[in-house]
Image 1 (tube, rainbow, N blue to C red):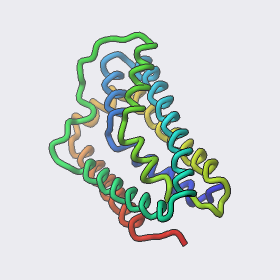
Image 2 (image 1 turned 90 degrees about the vertical axis):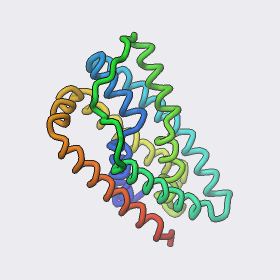
Image 3 (image 1 turned 120 degrees about the horizontal axis):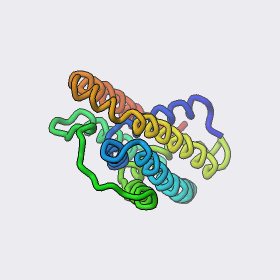
Image 4 (image 1 turned 90 degrees about the horizontal axis):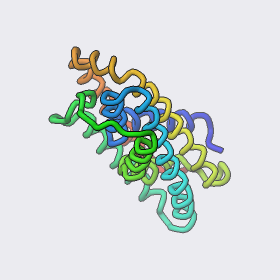
Length: 210
């Protein structure tokens, strides 16, 4: 099993994944603003079901790669650093559409909401890249089953994003009003997040498994 420091670091990166706007967050906020909290929660269940499917598939595939392919760890480590650097740029780049801007959306039933949420997550490249590029460096053959480690770490990511999305869905209206009235708060959040992701990317790129 991963040690406590590994679990906490991975949880922090999972938070970074969650707070970086992407298809899941955009859909959940848009649906909540357009149709209310209940619709947002049903959509959230679909999104996290999709994330769980990606996690299970990635856990099996990454485990096989690390066991079978020489230098797979270093390739995935450097890929993870590049991906985190890309997330840092996405956080600070100019010209992005504000996340909490209201978007007109048609009303949908629960099954449709769940299905769209599921499809949004399954087709979300941000989640898939996170598992392929960021997860492997946190797995240690000396700590036990690689597959079990991947499941534990993946469950942390799903849990962190579920809690964050639930808070976001519940407070989407209030957050939208707050941030739209205080653009400096949003700018500060973007730069702090971008700097943190960039530092982690540098650390990941310059270290190797002992």
